[in-house]
Image (cartoon, rainbow, N blue to C red; front, side, top):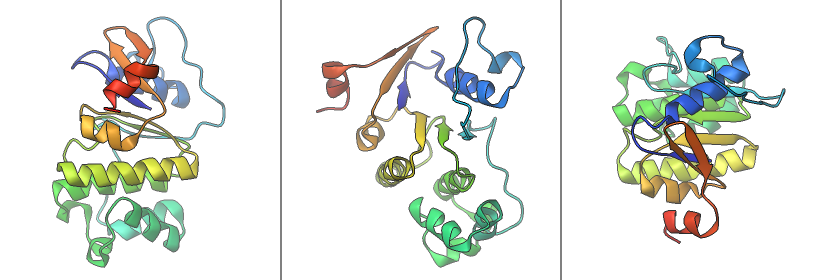
Length: 191
């Protein structure tokens, strides 16, 4: 599912509300002012809200970081490969040694290593060039579908939305949210 809307319309707030409902967070910014968010009991969430909630990397290599979450070396390598960090040199790299785009992909790998069934991502691919962003989006979409992960992400990039080929497109606008249907969704995706 892709969430779109104007700046300040509430896209990030929607992700916070979903996350807060799953984690039982009782802070104002994670609770709706009215109504209720209903979440399945089996929800295992990973989230990326840049500058707010992000994976924490220590001084370990990327491979060690992902392995520490999965406890499976083959799976750790597979996850790094799936997000486009397949170079063996990058396996040994530390997070702080990476380029901005590589850091974005490392964060995705870290989230996937948590084995979520719900993945929330704000400002997806904001720091990736167009071609890399499209490749990572295509891989992430395939991976989410294959692994049965519900993916909810916010992006403003039309080329990313098209590559993701979302099942749902949600328009958020200052206290409202609505799903694009039929022809409206096709138009938005350029079909």
